[in-house]
Length: 79
Image 1 (cartoon, rainbow, N blue to C red):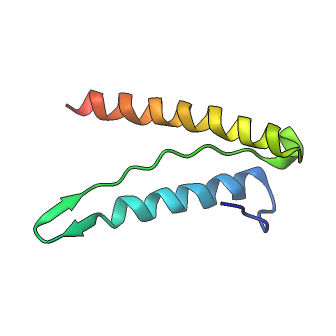
Image 2: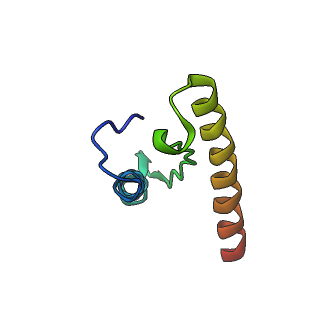
């Protein structure tokens, strides 16, 4: 996703939090099955890493795996 209108890093992170919240509030439902979808996100803020596609992609990829690990450990702590 590309958030072109973010005015600051904080606004950018709030937009991502809003997207994650939408997933938490809207489970996938089919027939009687309900599944919580917990996406992992990685992001790169252009002011921090620049506009080079490869750098942005690599930064997002690393951040996504860190997010995935964080989510897994949070769910493991619940079980």
